[in-house]
Image 1 (cartoon, rainbow, N blue to C red):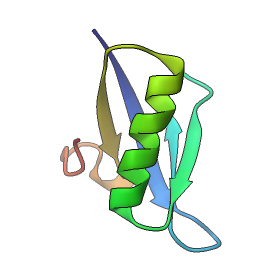
Image 2: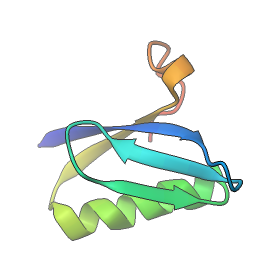
Image 3: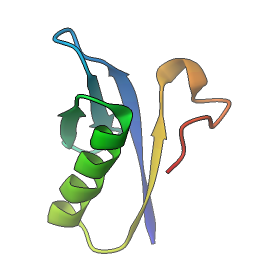
Length: 67
């Protein structure tokens, strides 16, 4: 199983954005819950079995936003 790490940030238009490290995968959502679902849907389109790890840049070392 592979692991894809997403960096989560605030969108200039409101809501959140997520970009996968090392992959050309981007998505967004109005809430963190919506963003998580959008990430899961995006991953299903690109890969089969993958562990998803979301981290805000300031929290990346604390592992505060794991899914």
